[in-house]
Image (cartoon, rainbow, N blue to C red; front, top):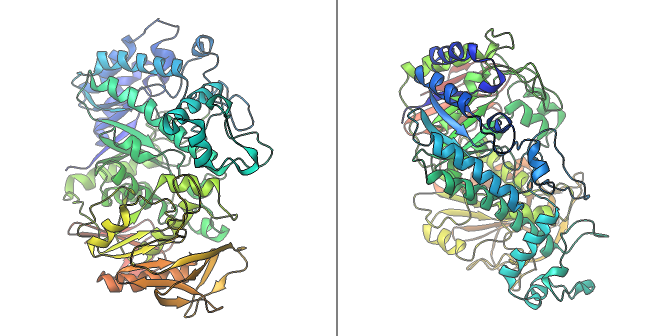
Length: 631
């Protein structure tokens, strides 16, 4: 498949006399795609029923005249001000009971049926009008579900919907009481209408209550998205996408992904380094102008799975952004570097946010490919270089990796509900394992927990999966791959209780987690041979083969055949030892890489990326900062 480039454009922000020039400049730059419309509701319908599609018709025609293909976004992330007069109770409410009001974006509650109907209505109008337009190439539903902490809402609409969701799930209050263990602290309910949302309680709510609220909230996102998808499909055959974000785990992306044709995500390497990673200051300084070496790659691999192999970067950072604690400019060459990293992981398209920097409103300090005065910004030349690369280079093949890493959004919710120790975060654990694999030169596929076909994988890892599906272990075992489970694997039932038999309850592995403790970051427990266990530590009993013990003589790593269990959170040194041992047993080649180097095998092509600020010698070649090689 040919790799392509695009940009995000807002014709409603600019006078019509420059649209044709913009479109011609986009085409001359080598762009194929242009996303429009996702924030334009107030211009499409300035008053209830006053539909103004003429300007969008002209924008479609202008862009199409230069051969550009359009991604049309539904504008439901930014309902206009008059919508609140029609539905004054549509706003989301935060955990402190405060309405999250108008004046920015994402000001709606997923559970509000009235607003959901309005979203379907505007989506239907757009689909009917543009669904068969020859310039339409794809759709985008809404924009960045979950951004700004907008999945969990404690509104009256959410309360009513949650009660109904619980009634359908449990059928009777007695069944719910048994499942949640409400006999504890006299929390039993006589009727579903007695159940409140799990906020504003004196101390922590029942974790089963909080967990079901997370499940419900995720289902509401999927329900909201499905309504738009169904509406679009009635009028259009163009593929449908949604643009996810980095480290947003409040809803199940696999669930929405099953409704869609393409997964996209919005990649902001410098902003995410500052805003979404718990790393030391020295790490953030070193990569301040390049981004973390593994964070973008992790999401590339995640969204390749969410999209069933089809995925794009819908918004690629083209320069300094405006929303992180610090907003440095990228090193020269980084926009080209990030684009090729995405292609190496299988992206079909990379689109840059945005075409022209806005001189007004909240994102006026966010760089674009053009400056506000229409002159070319720094990133423009780098995109031109990528376009030239694509003309000259062979296409990139995407093949199955030898290593599978399971990622489960439900585990992220349960860890958040009951972390047991500060810093015990599911995403962080999985990401550290991913980073450890990458440091060994391995390519990785990230898979959902309902995967049952592990054919051709040599190594499978399921860290932190505390509520695994019952048929996951047999599916992994029958594959014959080397497998690593834990910590915390199988530690909760679906009702958020400790299971009996005690975890990890892996068939064939004689092991029991007899006790759990969480450790201060400054009190790691050394492991014999090097490295340590930190944060989360399990005291293991049983007859399984012990591969590693800690300084107290307690088992840390157990084995039964190809199945392994890790009873703690490994530091990077011990993690590298564990992963190297398992890769060796699996017959997977590992390579000692310099700290800043990462590699990705894409079919017959090996990509080598230098993420550091200094040149690196690797395999006899000097790779400059922001440099990469194809072999």
